[in-house]
Image (cartoon, rainbow, N blue to C red):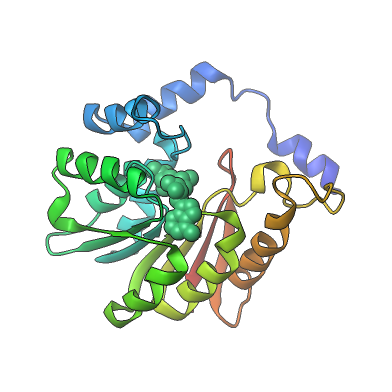
Length: 230
Ligand SMILES: C[S@@+](CC[C@H](N)C(=O)[O-])C[C@H]1O[C@@H](n2cnc3c(N)ncnc32)[C@H](O)[C@@H]1O
């Protein structure tokens, strides 16, 4: 099948909004606490850029599927994805989540407490590349979720490849880079221009079969790349 035919066949045309809403209600089952954390984020002066309910459930699923007890998240925002991840942890499990902006971290801390997840979550305030080297001593980790500054993805993916256990998962959100991942023609003053090379480098690393036994792009709206550490 040629690539164009493949895309036509996979876009079956019946995935209308009402069907997707039904699936979100049936499968994601975002409860009132999570919904309020997500919906109240803009009113607290933070951008509405958290993952959605389906992606939150997907993170919960992936953490559960690999039996995660220890997780590192880079990019906390208001703690929405952190709550989904921490909820997948067993008693005694720990999520380390890293946030650069102290205002975001303050909101996240309250949300995580409201969700009853403080005992399973450690919030680190600082830049990912400053905090991650300190976390290495606590590893290896079962899962790393990368969802912060896109220009930093290559460095975060390298750290994750070195600090996630065999059989653990490395997950990169926004892997389509807002539709610009494949573009070689972005004007140099385009916001995403400096992010193309680090995002491609991160994905190349995840697709490296010497390091990861399998890598897939989950076709969420933003693209979520997932790889299993060899
Ligand atoms: C897309 S948001 C994270 C959304 C969150 N994972 C969720 O789905 O609920 C990205 C976050 O990364 C933070 N950030 C940006 N640069 C960072 C850095 N160098 N280190 C750590 N966090 C950073 C931003 O302040 C922002 O809160």
